[in-house]
Length: 347
Ligand code: GH3
Ligand code: MG
Ligand code: MG
Image 1 (cartoon, rainbow, N blue to C red):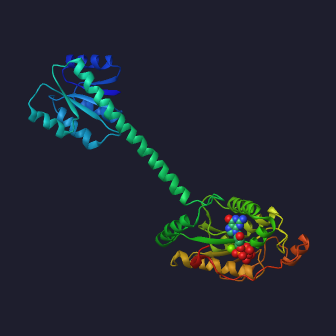
Image 2: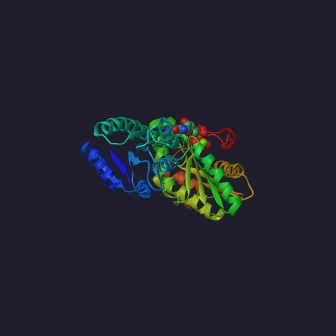
Image 3: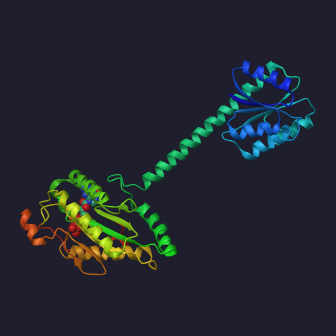
């Protein structure tokens, strides 16, 4: 153990030091209470053995200070006293001492007291380790609860928390942000044709691709099966729309085969809405969702903003031309887009 020994009598201090070191412990010596207090604040000690009667702060005052400060994990205190009646001993314990040794000092007694001290210190050390492990575990569980296991993106729970913080910032400081809602087109058809495991792979690739297009300050979430929500900080509507078109183009450029789609490849549709500081977060998401709905209805593989009509794909190629390029028939089961949608119904 590491011990701090304190006595204003240099001979007593040296004697104590000899005994303690003989037992294999490390020591630091303090010639008075102030000295001891300075050492305690500069380093870590398992045990303090201090004389009671010293110029201020005396041993009792030192005990009180140590208990008040609550050094981690625990400081075991043994008071050295020439005084002896039980009333005095109760005072030492009340001041925060764990044990006492009556002078004159005997090495056998000191050894016995330090065995008890070591036992108590090891329990405190174990408790501190457990506590640390629990804090870490808690952090991991908290993180896991907010992370989508498939894409490793933040999930809906984190989105809800972030939105509250963001709208507070928007209201208080007038900071703006935009919401992008992206949805993979004809994804049910992809699963049906290529199987779920390949569908999962596509989800991961699309998530990575959207993420790669975003700035460090932006945030991306998987908020439903094949839906992603991005919060683009400090972007006005037109900036966000350009960003969304870049995202859409990047997904198109992956050129992942999807013969169940009229485009022949995996594509996404995106709805964009700028957050008004006076609006609640749900309103902005609803607007982005409505824009997404329009993008879907207008043929998918495009970006629409709120308010406004759908904006054609940035590839510059009209939809029909891309159908021709990929020579993919329109899927039989392609459904008109009906809004079960994001805010009210969840996934
Ligand atoms: P639309 O163009 O209108 O968006 O059509 P869609 O087929 O993409 O939309 P729909 O809502 O009909 O189907 C969504 C599909 O997403 C159905 C579901 O099987 C799939 N999906 C949702 N979550 C996952 C997932 O974790 N892994 C896989 N592989 N597929 C998923
Ligand atoms: Mg979809
Ligand atoms: Mg969907």
